[in-house]
Amino acid sequence: MHKELAIDIEFDQRHIWHPYTSTINPLPCYPVTSANGVYITLEDGTQLIDGMASWWSAIHGYSHPHLTAVAKNQLDKMSHVMFGGITHQPAVDLCKKLVSMTPQGLDTVFLADSGSVAVEVALKMALQYWHAKGQSRAKFLTLRHGYHGDTFAAMSVTDPDNSMHSLYKDFVPEHIFADSPQCGFRDEWNEDDINDFSEKLAQHHQQIAAVILEPIVQGAGGMRLYHPTYLCRVRELCDNYGVLLIADEIAVGFGRTGKLFACDHANISPDIMCVGKALTGGYMTLSATITHKKIADTICSGDAGCFMHGPTFMGNPLACAVANASLEILEQNQWQQQVASIEEQLAAELPPIAALDKVKQVRWLGAIGVIELHQPVNMVEIQQAFVNAGVWIRPFGKLVYIMPPYIITSTQLSCLTQAIYKVLNT
Ligand SMILES: *Cc1c(COP(=O)(O)O)cnc(C)c1O
Image (cartoon, rainbow, N blue to C red; front, side, top):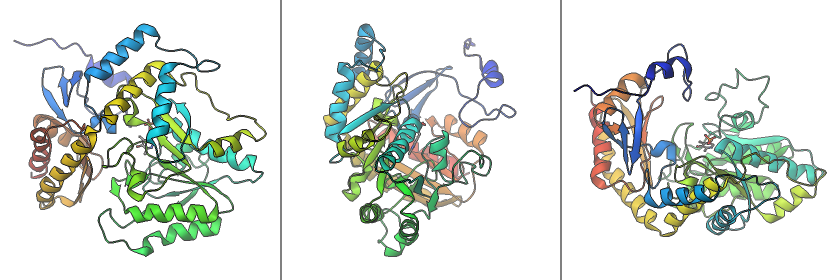
């Protein structure tokens, strides 16, 4: 019997923008009605094994009983109340956890609404910091192939080619880009890798307010996994020149790389850290920018007398309560074993994929698996092929990659890697 479908896809295609889409050539969209554990259910009843964790966020899987219960309970108390002049238990509980989990010294939290806003906040903190110290420093040093978000300041420190700086050149301030790291995570460290970064910092440090980078994994700018020593050198150089270091942990924070934070691979602590994406276990948008009390106090000693930011939905109680519940699950420490098992299985199941003609390289770290191809994929065809194979994997450009929920079983993970093999072997 033909089941009537309710989601009006025609309306969607005509009136709704999806991430990075064209209204002239809208790509097909798959109607989803629910998601549970590692499964995403399409309107026609098809169940797909999720390889994306909804862009790094759904680390515990969808519709997690604890997260859902906490959300419902919080809804009965209050969904939102302004944060100006008011505080509440969910925000205090969450910030206590963030202060205790994050690398040493990070003890002052700004709650923001999305990853991009957390980055904007971090950049503003750095600018206000130097302003308060009576120095005019308005440049940021960052890396090619980096990604920090889609708002203007975040875009200005994102790889200029990927974020079309040429298109926005009258609006996006020009910052300084160092060559991206070439040494892979497991390669032998080559001291030359830091040269370009080191030279740019030496040359411009008096104008540089902060270095901003994604620690260990450059995500949306190319899924590149780089050497921990690079990050150690960056920390040393920032200390030597007295430049602030901002670590954007929005994609990789909360266990994704096998450490709680990617900075932990290099045993460094940044001056400012951004988290987002997995913060609420993928339930809703929330992010945080965390710094040291000393930096915060310097910021507030300046002309403005305060930090100049305060979004309407700052500290949203519903989001804070769910984030707190997600961090509770992480505190039970199962993620370590889960991510280690995923990594071990990727190490066994990705190398055979590297033998396929289309594949240039495979790489993995923690619960991240990357297959880099020689040519960009045909999105429409490959997306349908993955759905036909019963999995949800969304490539971009030359990259087919997975970062599944940590709860994925080894059988389910094998379905993902086998689907990739099958789809790329055509
Ligand atoms: C996704 C991402 C952002 C932006 O977060 P949004 O929530 O999409 O605004 C910033 N930095 C990194 C490293 C990201 O992966």
